[in-house]
Image (cartoon, helix red, strand yellow):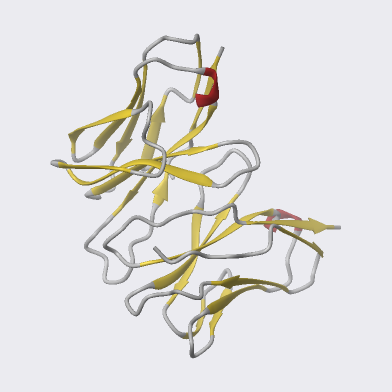
Length: 109
Length: 115
């Protein structure tokens, strides 16, 4: 399973754009990159998934360079309600995804 | 996600007791998972099942067992609970029929305290 590395924590002010970068140097050809969000005492929730280049949905954007050894989750204009832990996962459909410790994002008013 | 339910939501038990945590889903998914989460840490996979006849150990299966009674039900048992099994337990489901890597849907969690 491809291992991921992401910052343990980040702080941001409300209204700013937040970028969380994840490293996955040994990503396999069939692997996709998936990000989840977890609020305290709740289960993680799917945010976005991509294979290469850029993916955007109503919640976030995901940027993946050509070598796919890293990815960046971008949250536009964060609010206090975006305070959560964000997990970067890499894998294919053949094996279960592995959740690391994630990045704890704190949004400050 | 209301389609994935866990019972009980909270449980206090004593060391040595046997307890069962139950998970049910109405999403029609074939894959189900059990995770535990300790305070301030990420999720660790205990067991997973890709269909009714398939059971696989995860990262931390020691001290746990599971039963996949039906496609919609996946139970986690602690045969003899110990205090370091105090944690938040999550059940999750996914659909192998999705075109890309499947999305996991999590239940609300069961908070377990072993005294």
